[in-house]
Image (cartoon, rainbow, N blue to C red; front, side, top):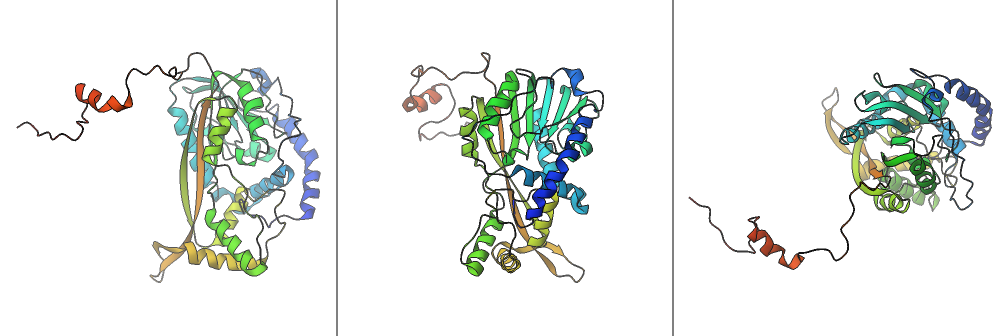
Amino acid sequence: FGFISGSGSPAAFLVACCHRRAARATAARLSSASSTGSADDAGIAKSASVPSSSTSVMNVFDRRAKLLQRRRGLLRPERQCCGYLREEMGWRTFDRICDIKRDFSVIVDYGCDSGHIAKHITADMAKRIYQCDWLPEALETAEKSPEVPTHNVLVEGENFFPFAENSLDLVVSSMSLHWINDLPGFFSREILRALKPDGCLLGSTLGGDSLYELRCSLQLAEQERLGGFAPHVSPFTSNADLGALMQNCGYALVSIDVDEIVVRYPSVHDLLTDLRAMGETNAAWNRPLRLNRDVLTAAAAIYDFMYGGEDGEEDSEGQRRRSVPATFQFVNFIGWKPHHSQQKPARRGSASVSLRDLGSVMEKNGGGGGGGTDSKPKS
């Protein structure tokens, strides 16, 4: 589950095919609907990029299965109370946008889901917002900014970014890039192409240590019951790999940092229920189509034994409740399209002071670092 697999079946792919015609009809309807006007009125979404046809891309995720999982998640009754992670990361992404002291004419939220970022953006930050998502049902329910004209755009292809070259000031994304197969191509051929010079890419994605408790518990349980284990947890990128990827794609001034959010659940079954409602079940091609019930029971016991504990709350009988933690690691990133006005590193060999003389320089300038000499405060 990752996330975890076990909820799919061969019939699911037939159902997904049946939804394609309805999805196309919904896309046509959405293309002409927005809060204040159509996307065509803005003159940006008119120029569509050509989907990549590279044959060297590693195909890790089943896109049709992921669309079906997300559609099922939207229909689950507990969906309304399971958006806490997206809501939190949407707010944190908005807070990072506020740290950039400039006005953005056009902002694109890629993978908007229920509009967790756009609803916070105010009129003094942007003039126009485009919310993009793969799922028509998500766009229909996505919240919009109360002050900024917001347009919905359906993105049918994984490497399809329907915006003209040098047309966007800011592209944001929260909790959606971890399901893209060709992330290098999407960063370079699509987003970097569409950004204006000195335009910004900012967002967050799930990191490699996400749900490590669940991953270890399932591996130990399957090893014990079946003599081997299958990849039940989806692969995620690490912060080092993501930073190197952005630099290789041509972004400047790349900065990476990591957040961890630990959520406690009454049991592992409650964790799995929330992951299904989020639409975040495993969509890797090599996932097993079902999870053995005996293995799940053993995994729940191992999870509680290795990571469970009392969370400080008491039940009606005065007994402290037990809960299990689930760690979600988020890799936050920001990069800029190169521009001549950006800071440049100093020329190699241009330094005028050696690090060996740093102590004496600080002493001379009154900056402390007396090299171990005693100094007494003046009375």
